[in-house]
Image 1 (cartoon, one colour):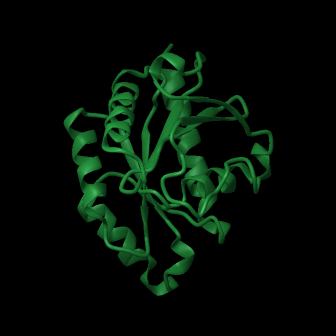
Image 2: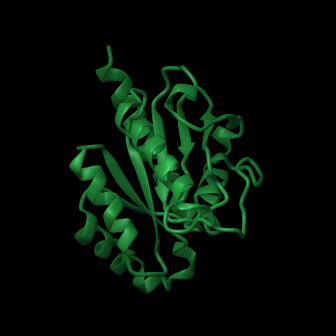
Length: 198
């Protein structure tokens, strides 16, 4: 995955009006806290410390933008399902994130991460229903696939396909053999987006 060693952190933003202006296709990451969003970014970038990983769920409270060469952007969003903050603060985040997801023109597709070790959780379903209601493009990445016996990986993927539909790709930050496929898929979507914008 060395072709993207020049991936870099760009900026953090709390809301849409603070997001950077550029034309690269953007891929926001959605997922429960601790699903492995930071590890996903680091593995794609082939860098260990590009995105800060934390053992404390709910640590990310801003939209963090990462630029991958001149190809695409990843936007790491606050995880859902866990946060030791007031209800008022959570409502504010939700409002800002909804505005960003609905109005941000650069978004090419959302990436919803789900933890392959567990059944799909209630708030994963709620998030997907919200995305479908707003007709937002999304595909699914099943993380922590290295924790699943190889004989059961296809069952986990088929389960996610049955529940969510669309494209479902396995991923592991530990075992990199699936990661090239995810990178290729993002690059393909980016190329298709750029073609259609001319």
